[in-house]
Length: 117
Image (cartoon, rainbow, N blue to C red; front, side):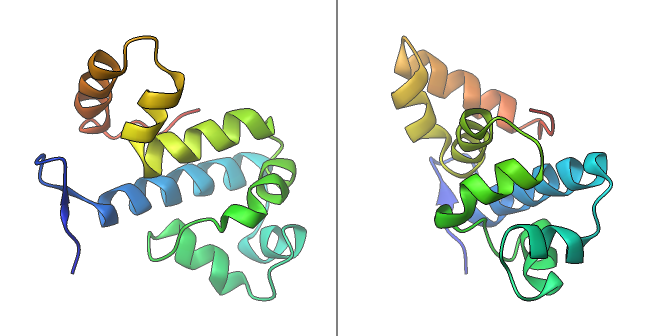
């Protein structure tokens, strides 16, 4: 069971799904199969990538750099995007000049399911 986040009715499953869509979009733009991405990031099975892309799992933090390199994304951009998708409130606290206003903006934007970098 997943809990709603910040009283918005959104759950951790929603954010995991959005992260999965982001990873899938980047993978497809690079023309990689799930098996090729799995190998590039040091995962044994392509099903690990599948589980991330459908929102069952998240990108393991110890593999952020490997994913960024394999997906040809600046690691800082990839890391910030992963943080924004998995913990938008922490992202706002770290990167916004006015955290409260940024948190409110993120709550509104994430409700629209953004999928680009």
